[in-house]
Amino acid sequence: MRSFFLVCLLVGPSVLAAGKSDIDPKLQEIINKIDARNQEVKSLKANFMQRREMSLLKEPVIKKGVFYLDRELGLKFAFEPQEDMVLVVVDKEMVSLSPKAKKAARIPLKKRRTFLAHDLLMKKLRLVLDYFQISYTQGPDGEIGRTLTLLPTKRKAKKKVQELKLWFDETYLINKVQVTAPDGDVFLLELSDVTINPPLDEAMFQTEIPDDFELSDRMDFIFGPNTSL
Image (tube, rainbow, N blue to C red; front, side):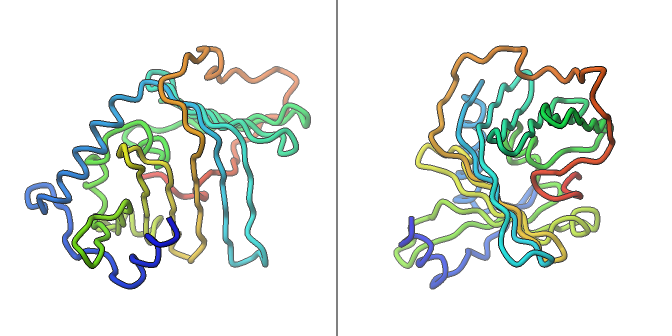
């Protein structure tokens, strides 16, 4: 992996970009394989690492936990116990819970508004081509790397994302997402020890909030406060 990053630095990304009707065949093949692999994943369990590099902080903030995905139900981030936080994302809402502190937050997901992490991990990659120009890395021997760079093309996306990078493994499964915000802050989500299609209890994705919890409408997003489209 380290040598691959060196190749990217020396050679740089391909300038071939994706569009709805005009797309480089190699890039189209990558997108097709990623989307095909994604559709094979009905459920998923993995360790996750969230890293934030923010201008207001001297050191990056790193949090870890276990990530769950069920294509029919939603996403769940169960942070390590000391973080006292669980985040669940379903079709209509996002809910965070802090059981020890007895605090919670609920944010409805409006119609036609998408949550970036939800879309990248649960839907087809080609859907983001409405908002981004996409390119791939290529080595000196012409070998295609496992990184995609997406640059926003619409004003709506440019206001919220400066750059989006995706990494995929040898099976074309996305396992790393990095968002650079317009102010330069960087948000990274990386998955490891991935298990594909494990049995998951439906109750894991319930969003009920206990009556004795303090409820808020403010939430600490995985990819920053404005990464919805």
